[in-house]
Length: 448
Image (cartoon, rainbow, N blue to C red):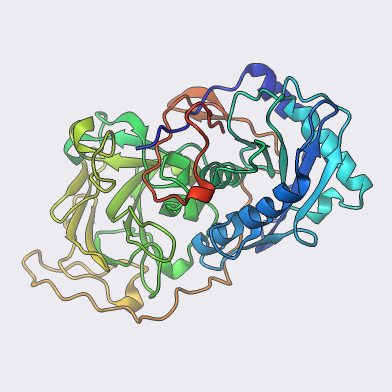
């Protein structure tokens, strides 16, 4: 296994510079399109050695038909939001800015580049995301990549070989959409009470060490309204549901969003589809603190690290198999996995201490609860959803993620305040990677 890039705490000076950085206004929530502008940047003391070679690589990394930033996000959104080059081919420059590379002054790099682009006829209102690509040799940035949380700016230092970590690129754009680093909660025996403890990353999303070939989790999709109404069940009483994989063909429920006091518990089924989730399989559950889907965490019922996704355990070792239960006695909530197949899963949700019915909802009723039935009723074979394409979700809209600027730089976790570019945890990738888009060397440190 290759060594993995490590996330690091960004110095306070960097965070202060980012806070002061100019930012393009966030687009309105009803704009189902994201325009991405890439700018190659030259410093006074450090220049891109081969701009032509880099431009070709960036066009492929950001806008290629396969294996690119835009192809990834177009696939995970299921057509709800489309991503494209902002102007022309989406890559401009190199632009020369009056700044030395040494010190990696992110705020000035951002501000001066935006002004240079405007002077070249590329105003800020022509793009929703600006990705700043600059030579790393003299900059000395102490992170592999950087992205504003809930904003539209990413900083991507690049070496002379013009190779970019696709995991880092997809990850930083995830921060633009408001996502925190995706952690794991160890809840032995599925007890959702006070005994859950944070333990590493989830490995179920690029935001939690899953690599860039992992899809986003259902809470992350819910945060940006990238699941349509019919794909999400929100029970208000005990019910049984048939889940279809989060990605792929077919209609039906893809996530069950369950009330858990002030929190939510979201259950999904993952299975390989297209380029996504090759190593993520099975039923998974996530706790959503205070209804903030951008800060969800995987619920792992295994008792110790050796039995979960840490170390060399299989990537789906923390999946919920048939018979698995998650319980919160204080809130009178129980979730039981009745069936956990590759194409469908059956999940019982018992609320207020009332046992869930034995039968799953019919397809037409999938987004709502079914009527209670006697506990000894014979299970009914779940109806197969039609094998048509996943709905494009034209009615869904891109939600605002983090306000109207790029300066949302901190968030609260467990009562403590973390820099939005901090974390200090090991980012492990368990997904397949092509040689052309491999992660940076082990000495690279991947930041927010």
